[in-house]
Length: 132
Image 1 (tube, rainbow, N blue to C red):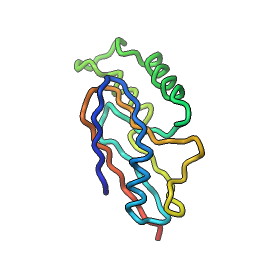
Image 2: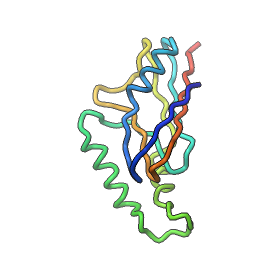
Image 3: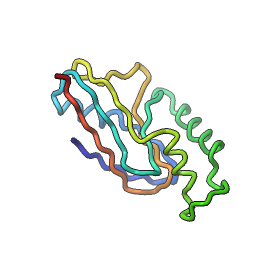
Image 4: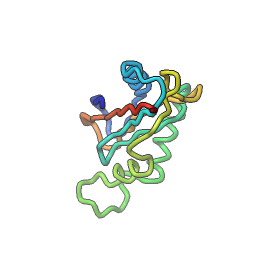
């Protein structure tokens, strides 16, 4: 298992981690298998979406804010309930097929880390499982 550390600088932020994950897969020498990307934080998430046009992720973040506004009426006293809800909607992990030593992503797809309660230092765990 590999660990990647990320420093975020804004409360809500999108970071494209595709190239980092590709390097880890390449280093693993696994030809065919599964790559699990997992974030162990309750106010951050991992998603796969278009990485050709940055406005897609901007739209995603803006609409999540519309659906779950930071100033909503919440019971959680830490003031970050919206971040917990957004992270739950998106999810904490993604599984990506490895085929011929490459991530099986679509032409326009990238892997993104989503921060909802930054700035913070975050960890991402990557587990490569070889097909037997």
